[in-house]
Length: 159
Image 1 (cartoon, one colour):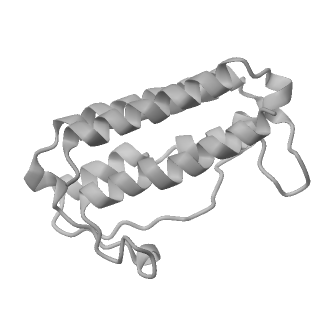
Image 2 (cartoon, rainbow, N blue to C red):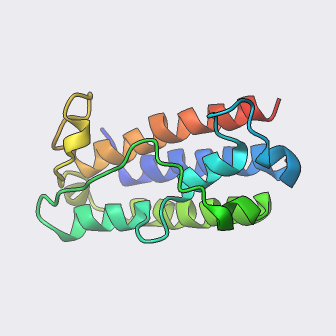
């Protein structure tokens, strides 16, 4: 069973991995794309930071505060713009780390009842999470699949 404590611990592990992987990366290396159309480290970090107008934190709060809200996602959007392109890798890393620490604290504070709340996520209809995932399942997916994939991507880009 997914618990708030296990989600918090898992997310903190991912935060440490992002921090460790990107702390020794230069701005030049972080801005280099391995091939045309492929993301550089700054673009991966921009994606993880999400759009300026809504964070993953806000998404979790939506699960908690509303009855079966519709949560629309735009998969694969990097949010890499001119401001983020000129930002240092340290600034982008701090943005991601700060946001995910906030999320970690929020997840750690949720009750079992809150973790069973659902949202309507049409983009997940054909995935194991399904169209109406619980907050616990959605959060575990974010941590163990989405973040894990991007951490592996950063790891590969660091080589």
